[in-house]
Image 1 (cartoon, rainbow, N blue to C red):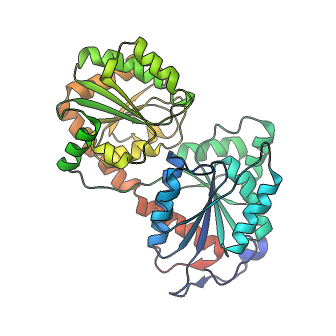
Image 2: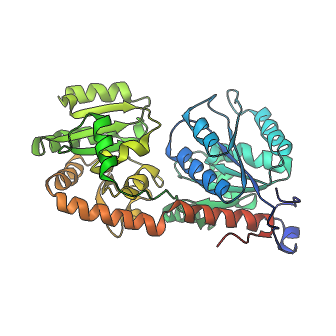
Image 3: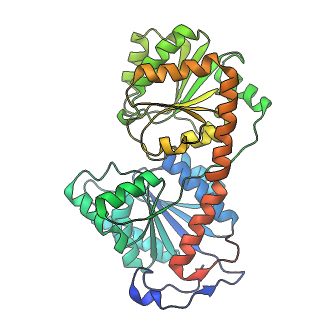
Length: 394
């Protein structure tokens, strides 16, 4: 771990402290505070970042407080990360602050990294109690819908180094709170495309190699608006009889969506796979990665699909338009069934266009959204907050 803590880098006295170079045998100990251990975009981003930090020789502890357990625990542990599970009482749990602070102190954590507004509210107080540095990542801005939450957002920059995952979120913070912040885009691994992986995935999904497979990896919750996707798929199926829709994820809307698929007479052309921990194995079997959300930050599921060479069909919300500004997919207005169906049909009937846009999607990820670039940016932010220079960080 870093040899000594100092007061927050946001305080004036820290500005005068000389920067020092870390010894080769020194590492940072970073704690990441998240809510869940379920498989979600934020959790997969935290996993990718944790794995990258561990590979760079740093120590990582992940603290979760809203789920007793979940599949992501084993994923974190497999890459050498300690997972600490805490439980939150109903309402605002003041005792959780002390328990998080105790974890930070007992493990000698140098810096706490919080994700989303809830973890920030607990983590910022815990970091102050434990006298550790604080970095906070904003993954979206839809949570700032109450006066007290807006007040938290407005005072956040005085307490933490704030980072946004998209320029759109950074612009929103500037307009809402009058403060700018850095942008560190989410990053994903860039696997090598493989025909064997595609065949294995199709076999796993019980689909033929000649099927046109539309994949969607998203929680089955209202903001993802799967109803629009199902209705668009109904129209796609009329023009592309070999089309299949694979929905990966679970959530409160599952029952209603299964009923909607039945009412639309989609039959076995739609597959509800539920929660899966093998998304990376399923992705090579898709032809398109799709998302019909009414609000988003920077969806990791789209990045993971693009990294596999899949073109995107998505709604123009959050950071998605900026992601596809140079190609790699097709956009539709949120809730526009016709436009979404046209895009799905276009790729279904134009395999050459699908291949070209998929290649462009992979290029976009390799240049601007790689896990290695993301990890390097965060490692440098941590080092800056701690007043050290990392020799291994570019």
